[in-house]
Image (cartoon, rainbow, N blue to C red; front, side, top):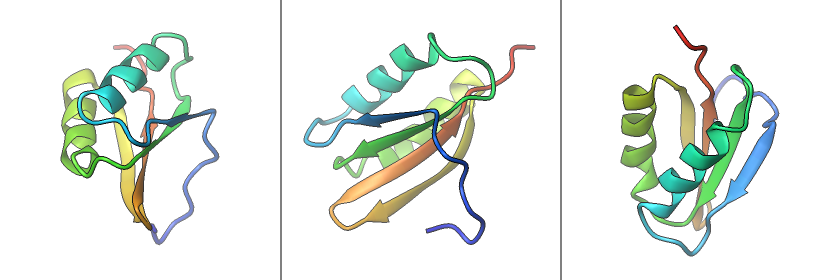
Length: 84
């Protein structure tokens, strides 16, 4: 877990049991419906999320707040970017 507390998510997506690219597809779909600055927590069991989520955030100009392992799952926090 991070040293500083993470914000409470506006939306939690549980993609447990699904493999890449499902977690990324789901967050991309959800981000279309959220306001700028909203926070999403994606729960995933696919370890690929550790590298996929930061790359997706850079490509889409969203802010990756961190991805942390919790037992058999990972929790990845993303803040929706503010359009330029």
